[in-house]
Length: 286
Image (cartoon, rainbow, N blue to C red; front, side):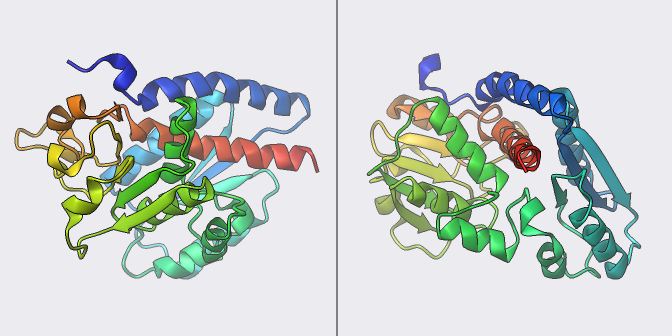
């Protein structure tokens, strides 16, 4: 059995931060500013619909104005880009996202590049990515930012730590590496072509895993008393929700570990709404 202090409980952190964020929204409303978040959803992808519904529920709980723009799959690229331009220029919208994926007839890169970096709460535009890597981010990818918020809550100091990230996606692996570099960690990014993966991961003080392979990381991949961040959301052989790390095999070997579910997942939406509030605070302060 895992002692509760060993768990990095994103759900608990998110609940705690909700109180602070609600107060920040109240202060903004007293100044006549209501934070605004918009989401563009194209088509009826069931997973995307769930993500959007969760964002809507969380934003409205905190007092943020939430706007869903739902297009049919037949929407043209021109129509979608026109709506993005409209949101770029809407003073009531502090941040917005285009829920990916989009249909094949729409150029995803064009869509991302059309979003104003000032409202890019996903942190995916080339300018946002560049700002992140030079250490001056205006916005940050939500999952990576959520991981850092959770580590801060548990007073995990990354300064000088040896961090290994398994997975090099633009959504999690790369931005997490950038944020941790900005905290003075020594960061190694590994991936499917990495040789001697086990040898590298077993030297990590902090191990972040985001590869989408159920229970891939076993105890022999992990340094004794390491901190393990499991970003995976998979199903095991019995159809039960699990992460990329074999939790039961690893849990007694580490100092801290995120559970799945209830670890990184809740922090993603927390980081997203936190950024919307931050942008609204910037608007309120002129």
